[in-house]
Picture 1: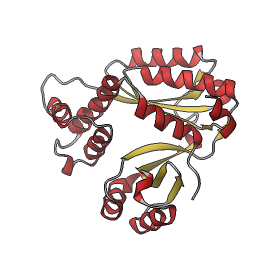
Picture 2 (picture 1 turned 180 degrees about the vertical axis):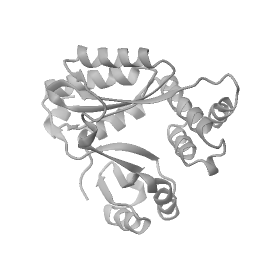
Picture 3 (picture 1 turned 45 degrees about the vertical axis):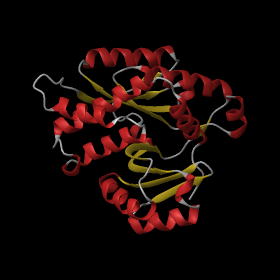
Picture 4 (picture 1 turned 135 degrees about the vertical axis):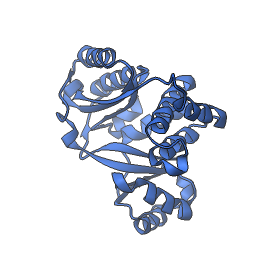
Length: 246
């Protein structure tokens, strides 16, 4: 068990305070539509869709918006999106993975490459940085779920692999193929999670100084502001003294 990434905590707070809800809802809706189109439109029969709906609910997306996104997947004129992953290095060689859903690969690739270049980084080839990350399931609970020992015991019994806890909550990790099973088992013990999703988890993190942290945040903000980009993950952390200055 370990404390959660300081950068992840900053990211979490930023996400909850972000005023641009419409952009966030648009990205969540796109994932719901794609998940429903690729599988069954019933979340109970489609694990990916079930996770997408859970993610939307965790961000307080209205039920009617979720239902419209699912119905859109069954419409004959629904857009065809391609899932694509970009890998590269940001300022000071920090490894970054960008996941996108796009209806125009050339546009998205050009935009993402431009963002990296302007930040002083460079876009690499597939596999150039993902070997430094593990593909895992992440289940998030707030501090109200219990103390670290209580959550750790529940996680072990549910079949999870690891838990990171601090004053802001608990992050439970499991194999990518067992996310639904572990999430459901935990729900019976701890209640509904704040979030359950597949992530790229850094195998190690590099502490960065204030200047590098600011450059990385600008790059990540620019990437996340792109309509085609769904997720951005990087293998850096922000020390306490640097975080206090942000």
